[in-house]
Image 1 (cartoon, rainbow, N blue to C red):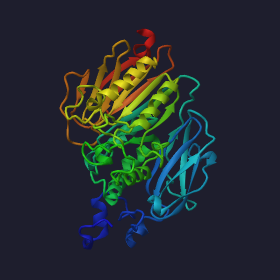
Image 2 (spheres, rainbow, N blue to C red; image 1 turned 90 degrees about the vertical axis):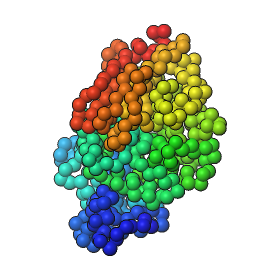
Image 3 (cartoon, rainbow, N blue to C red; image 1 turned 90 degrees about the horizontal axis):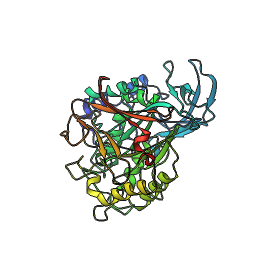
Image 4 (cartoon, rainbow, N blue to C red; image 1 turned 180 degrees about the horizontal axis):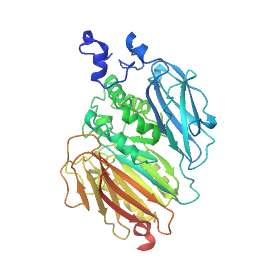
Length: 451
């Protein structure tokens, strides 16, 4: 049980102090009850969602919807067009369970590519979202070029005054948003109850829910939401013994297409595609070991190299929770400390003549653009964004093409793969929607054909 402070002053006060919604007061886990005050329960019926819906796993013909309910419940998602949900398509019913922290993921298939859909979530047969039903867009087909925007960033410590950034991001209408770690700040890997509490506060925050209902969410972790500062998980999948449980709590709170190799190879790496752009989301914590010279571990590294070699996408985005560039991190917690493995990956890209690779990263509490020159190959551009809601700023770096740390920031990647020479544009955006910086890279600039 969470050791609630000042319970006698009223559950509602505790609830408000943790930023949780009406109806959910305690930590729900494998052996922990849900505490619901009678007055709050009356105001928030059992059909209300505690968190979600969170969109994820979107393709050109399908979408997945994550939800958390107050108690175990049957959930169905209905997707249609327009406010009336015309031509509705229903997901199979799924049930939220206590042993999954009252979460479930419903999937709807048979949709049309590049189409706006309205949807509702039915909890025990009753609408949980009406009358303000959310809208999302399926991904464009991979058969041709497309124009679309993807957001990304890290460093999202819960700060009530900065939570409005999720609405600002949503106003940019990204098809997806990439959470690159430090998505919540926990630093208590042996305390699952505290981990759940921090996720409740983040996932139930209204602006975050509005973003997650409209844009597909994809997440990897970094040190503060995996373990402790600069943590190395080490090569053993079950040691330290807290690692598998941290992985389970993470999995219960996101809507990724997959999570590493599942129970066989724990982790949070995965890949997905939007039109003719492939995204490779890496896990730099679970198997990190300086003694073994690896950030990724052998299984994940093999997966990454094989998937990169097999990709025929116009652009290939490799996401890391920590920076790639040699001079991006003065704390020794980035790829700078794993130079041999980084060189192995970069050399593989050159040797296999893999075109269109762009790097993105988080962690450094600022926004950067880097150009990493490569001998005998094209330069690798790295775009960093890692000050979503946190108030701590890292010092800027004069060696970068651009480095900025003022205010709260997020990154956008604007893709246009319709012209003969496709482009990706990195935009640094402020919490009020101001464009701080932009850099456009053409496919011809990051292609071996132009060597």
